[in-house]
Length: 102
Image (tube, rainbow, N blue to C red; front, side, top):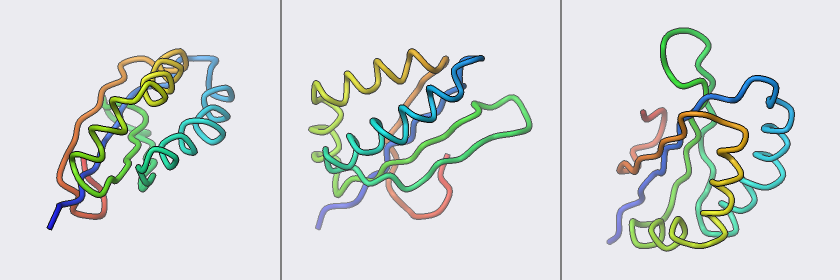
């Protein structure tokens, strides 16, 4: 049996880009993730401390599915566009355990 995995994206939103960022995430990034087989599960905002302001989580059925999705030209284009609204974008893959994961 394959094990679900979670892609975690963390970043800060560029000053003055908040509204455009929000529109992009809701209208483009999340639908594209779903189209590619990744289920959006988390959207966290950090309001205190020296941490990235945003953390998004996407779950995939298994590592192979996640690799296929994130290697696609569509996902790469979505991340490039996300970078126009953010700074410090980083991602990592973890075993999905449910709940908050960092």
